Each structure stands twice: as structure tokens, then as C-alpha cells.
Image (cartoon, rainbow, N blue to C red; front, side):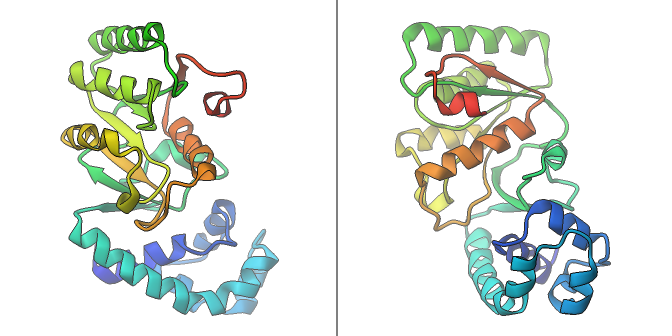
Length: 246
């Protein structure tokens, strides 16, 4: 993929007022990613389900999104980050079944997102010793019977990090989905674990590198954990915890 093609993919992901379903409709009419930036507004308005707010911002947002995409490309090239657009073969195919699928994700690591059996593991940040031990036991036993198992979680405190460490100890790949950009990795206490994960798995995000890990981002990233997984295991959760949203 050329730098120009990468720039176009990143730029498309930056349009705020177009959702995944709209974008799928538009791409049914395109022969290339570049064509997206040369569409006539009249033609766009004739495409089914393309929303009015996007039509209003389309032309004015193109230069802004392209400029930001160029800056993002410089960062990802410098930091050995991969991009996966929703039309790419490397994009997690299970996510495409989600109506709110991300348009693009960034990844660091070597994981293939489509060849394993994926188990999402979520739970409270205030895990008990019993919860952590149960998490480790479940994952280690599953790893013995399911050689293609891959664990997906959110790299947060508590059950998340316990599941990632259990996967590493069981010598199976694990994928961490973070709630911000790579420049603001959170929590920093888990950074070294994330480096170990990248040797066989990956750390992924849908956010550009300068995005802070805001609270609402974590609910948003939970849909990626669920959407990439064949099943989700909840180990411990508060009655109104984010795990139950997942």
C-alpha cells in the first residue's frame, strides 16, 4: 500500500458525521479509495441512506481531514504502526458484522485478526484475588484444549491485565484494545506488558495518536472487544460496570 493510499484511508476515518453503514453504501459506488474525495455532492445525495449532516460537511472537511491524515501517517511510519481499513483483508472480519464498526483501526504487533478463536475477557478493575485466580485458571485450561485461542481485553487494571498475563503465561496470543491514542498509553503501569503482548499478539486502537484516554472512549472501545470476539467471558463486574455493557 502506498503512502497516498494510507493517507486516504486515514482521512476517511476522520470524517465525524458519516457512520459505518453510510460508508458501506458509498463504497458500493466506488472503484478506489481515492474516488471518495472527488465525489459530486449531487451523486452523493442520490446514494441510499447517506445522511444530510455528512453532505453538508463533506467538501469543507476534505482538506482538514487530509491534512490531519498526513500528520498521522508521519507518526505511524515513525513508530511502526499498522493501519487496517474496513475494506482491507487484514481488517478483523468479525467487526464487519457490527452496525457501529470502526472505519479503521491502528495496530502494533504481529497478530492476525482473522485466523484464531477469539475470546473477549472483561471484568472489574477492582478484581478480587479469587477473580484473578479464576481468570488465570479458565484461560490456562482453555489454552490447553484450544490451540488457536486468542484472548482480547482492554489492558485496564484488574481482570483485563490478569487475562493478558494469563495468555502470555499460557503462550497464546493476546490483543489489547486501548481507549486512547498510542501517545497517551493508559495505564502506563501496563506498558511493559503491552510490549510483551506485541511479540505474538497486538495492541490496537481506533483513535489517532494524540487522543487522550477520555472516559467515554472506554465504552466505545468495549464494542471492539465484543465485536472481535467469538464469545465474551465476564469474570467479575459491578452491577453497573462497563463489563456488562460489553
